[in-house]
Each structure stands twice: as C-alpha cells, then as structure tokens.
Image (cartoon, rainbow, N blue to C red):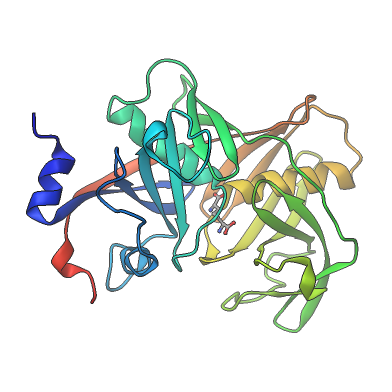
Length: 290
Ligand SMILES: N[C@@H](CCC[C@H](N)C(=O)O)C(=O)O
C-alpha cells in the first residue's frame, strides 16, 4: 500500500498541521519514518514559522516514530523533534508536547495508555484527560544556580532564579507585568556566562497564594503567548520563594490562557492544559526558498 508520506516523496509535497496550547503555536510535520524531512533544515523551519511569508508559528514539532529516529537513545513511542522559530533545536517544549499528543490522538496513533513521548530531555509520559485537557509529566526540575543572576530588559534589572526543566529558564518576579516593556530583543542577564546556550526568560507577578501570571521571552522564538516549560519553572520558583510544601498546585496565567501546574511530592512537575489542532494542509517543496 502507498502510505501518504510515500506519496509526498513522489509528488514533492509534504503534509503539515497547525496547533496551539494556550496560543503557543506550532507547525506539526508528520514524518513517521523520518524520511520526509531528513535532518530538517533550519532554513526550512524558519520559513515555515515566518508569520508573513510562511505558515507562521513559534516552533515546529516533527512527529517521528520513536524507533525510527536516531537523535536519542530512547525515542519513546513517538519522538518530538522540536525546533524554535529561528531554526534552533531545543530540548523540551511543554505546550508543544500536549499539541503533539493531541495530533497523535486525532490521527488514531495514541493508543489507550499514557503516551511515551521521546524528547531531547528524556521520555515524558502524557495522559489525555476526560475533560479534554492533557497532562504531561515534565520530570524533575533542577535549580543549578549560580546565585546572583540578573535579568535586564529596557534599562531595568531584576534578580532572577535559574530553573532547568530540561531547557533553561530565568524567572524574575516583577511588581507589574508592564514593567519589562516591549520585549523585542533577547533580554540580557548577568553574569553572561550563566547561560552560554541562551535562556528563556519569565517575568512573573504573584496573584494569590497559589496563582501567578507571567510573560515570557523564549530563546529562539521571542515573546510568545505562553511557554509550558516556563509555567513549570515559574511554579517551582514561586513555591520555593513562598517555602510551600509539596505537593503544591498553581494556576499560571499567560497572555494566551491559563494552565495548572503541580509540583508533586516525588519532585516531578505535572503540567495540565488545553491543546488543539486547528488547521492542516499540503506544502509544495517548490515554495521553499532557495
Ligand atoms: N514554548 C515551549 C518552549 C520551547 C523551547 C524554548 N524556546 C527553548 O529554546 O528552550 C514550551 O511550551 O515549553
């Protein structure tokens, strides 16, 4: 039988879908045996994510069968090959992984057990809930320091906490989310050596004992309307700052909606939120630049 992706190889087109989780949006590229996109060129990613000349997204989620990829040792049931809008590779994406599993479920590929999704930050177990939300076990946070990180944006400076959720985050508590101003360029931080590979920066205000609201400037994508790993990092930083005992649950508001994050007694962080796939199409390779 000719599979749809065989057809794509011969016709010079490839399938794509578009999805989002709290308006952090992604182009999905089904590539079950990894042959449609090869190594996935950074220029292709940049073009697909371009909001004017391409499809438009904060990142790309390439969907490969776990046993057919060669990026990590354990690729899970399905491997999420995540790329930022600028073409760079990131280890993990908390909103993306929910959208990824929504796609698998709608395509009849998820099965009825938790889906084991391989990422560059390890295998994550994902559960589809009866209320339509999706929960991701994001694993254990790390707080590697160093102390004394300062985030800078538009002439202001704030002390920040480094939280690693598989990818790096600098969390800064502010009095008002308007304080950091317009986040066009990557905010700075000191000491600069703290994040040689860049960092995602969250600005946070506390709204109650178990509620925060944040803005995020993502490494490789700029300011986005949400960041799942960022909401986890913020929950860990907020719970630690308030000396709250685990398990502790936070509602984290973002410009694109809200998610629920639980820092469990066993030190795992659990992220629950919405995820939808809302568009799909066929992309002709001749439309790609170069
Ligand atoms: N939006 C994502 C995070 C994507 C990766 C990030 N920009 C990085 O470079 O680490 C999320 O929902 O977690």
